[in-house]
Image (tube, rainbow, N blue to C red):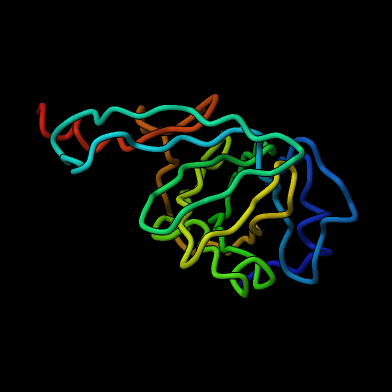
Length: 173
């Protein structure tokens, strides 16, 4: 079951933390999250799953930044979230998708107990100018049934910024 916007607001401070929280970003069954002022883009022509791929940071300004097709950009939310006893999910906003901007391409499924900023996988189908602070995606919450284990992974839990893929660590086992 998906929580309503009113239920999201009721659970703030207990099962749900969103910092900062702005009541105007609350929707009927989700909450809008905003884009920070930085992006990361990989610099290698071919990415290797078994390696920590090189990347560089792009600083966004109020003048905007033009994204190009055929690149993967990693962004992050301005909001830090923490979720207990619920499954957090992210989706791009329809207004953003209707401009050909794909947000959080494959990893919208969160885990019970996740806390941190959300790293967003972003790409566009044609050039587009983006801006920091824009409502870029929405978070919504599912209830969970049965006993569960709380997410405690060292790869992405309690992050502080944009995180590139940590899949390469799995090859070192």
